[in-house]
Length: 222
Image (cartoon, rainbow, N blue to C red; front, side, top):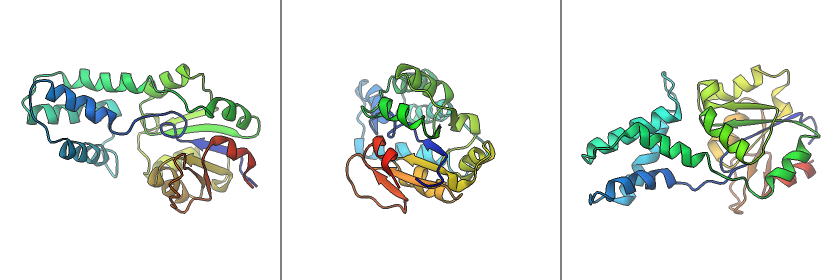
């Protein structure tokens, strides 16, 4: 991979499995279990924008725990539900802490670390990522989260802070992830090289330098 010296991995969807929409469905079930009717499609469509509105181009930083709590509270008030919004946010993050790695991750990371500095760059709270890494016996050289950087991908500050923390040129980084905006467009905007992890073979093109279906392919890129 030429001048690449450090590889930054997104965490969830790249190193660790997760089911999109699972958190929204958990909260929706808390509401419907009380016999309250909910339009599932509308509920799910509203869930993600609330997160985006509190993470993209915002002046005041909030952790994921704080965002989940605020979102739960908003929904419980709307449906007149008497539940502890913060406790339910903790429940969501506790479930997130149980995520497992993709089968190719342990062996591939071990080999990759022999050749490159390996970092994680993830939109998540520190304790959640720490639990997942410990559970899956994953180690890297440095960990960058939205919580410790006080901003979220694809905010350019996220990637710039990684650059500032390392004595490397932007083109000496390879950012690896499974989403277009966060893991390709964002890091490319600061000069990093990118690899899109396309495990499902979608053929999506976000302008990435490489497309891979497993992490093992990183060891053969030219």
